[in-house]
Length: 85
Image (cartoon, rainbow, N blue to C red):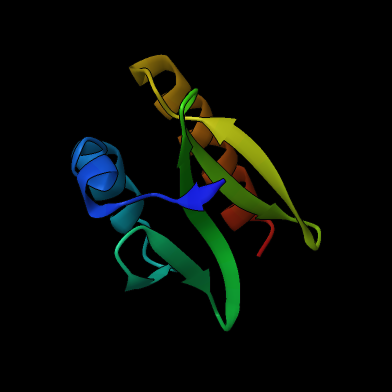
């Protein structure tokens, strides 16, 4: 599964804006977020859709992000992960 292209990320503009509003994240490249010095969140695309990989306990959990409902699930997971920082 390849990293999301800029065209795919353009379709996630509103979601990325909400993620960018989280103060403790650094976006080093478009759609690739770090917390402190560790990879925290990035996006992939494949024929089935776009997915976010969110760091959780040294591993990554995958979240589909193809609908607004899926965006809300991801944002909740991001907030939970940041809460335990």
